[in-house]
Length: 201
Image (cartoon, rainbow, N blue to C red):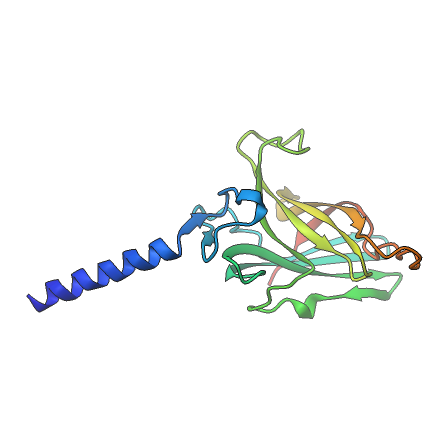
């Protein structure tokens, strides 16, 4: 009898916690982009899986590297939790390292230059040659140059039998600066499309 009581108490507590902190799929729209306080936007369908790893684009003396990882139950705003993809990058030109933020990507990092969980399906928002059921990511992107912010689309592909991604980067700003302030510098990472091969561990 005692075991039945313990089980009943456990399920009551579990249901109470779930009611207070709902678990929602990451594709659930966030009303007014605010989200539900205390909710956990979970990758219930594992659509964020398979992006983890280090990817490399090379062109002559230019080497552009991106490292991605899936972060579980992260809170960027202290209002709700979510699963998301986080990333950092390195750019080398003519043997000179222009930027390297790779060390900022740690198992617990939650404020990265690449981050987000937005999943796009098919031709939505500009992928004319995507299959109807194909998934890709649209994440936020920040250059280390102040005020330069944008977005990055990441699409899985195969190149010569190797896992790869097609990355498209564009800037949506510099963000607003005070009148009379110097004009922000251009981003170090150039906007454009990059095919990046996944490196072996």
